Length: 229
Ligand code: CA
Image (cartoon, rainbow, N blue to C red; front, side, top):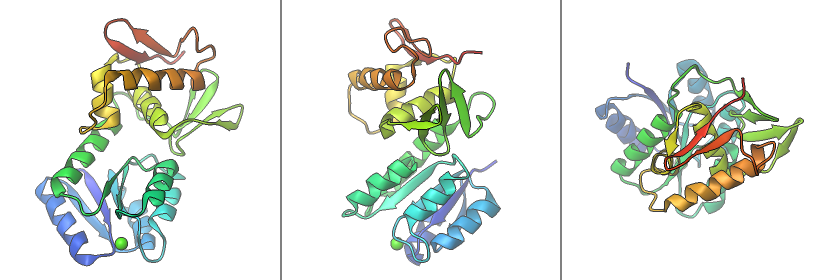
């Protein structure tokens, strides 16, 4: 069945062009022209992904992100203006999955959407919004990690890595796979980046980061997350 994408954009020409291009790509597109309509459509249509302009009438894109994240882990891709660096950072902190900066090519946007949808594909049962992992709780909807009810600091990319490994728990992931799936198709980094982020992730979630039991190294291959039964 075609995946549904909710296109939230107040500029009618852009919104309709996006919807048409997405439909040509095989998606079902639903449109909303302001923040309030976006939340209503999100609840009524249960889309697979939200494409969200940040500068919106009624409710801002950031407020829409906040409200969606209180209810759901649905992927959100933000459309931001070139000069709204702060909004972009706040949006990612609120739990958006990715962003494209206007003006963008549809080809670029389409690749981002595919990557974000693929990243969210679960291999097993869908995860609940909060997942216990050793001594911590992973709040997937809120993009937070809690220990004894208190939020522990975690960088957005480290959280994305954690969420990806959780959704693929028990599957060994190579560094290249992690780079492609978590950092995105255009990330020209090196596999060392993955190791550094795994180091930070272990420091945040492992009972003893020196002897990792949750995020295990598979020598010569990569990493695997194993959740204690
Ligand atoms: Ca706008």
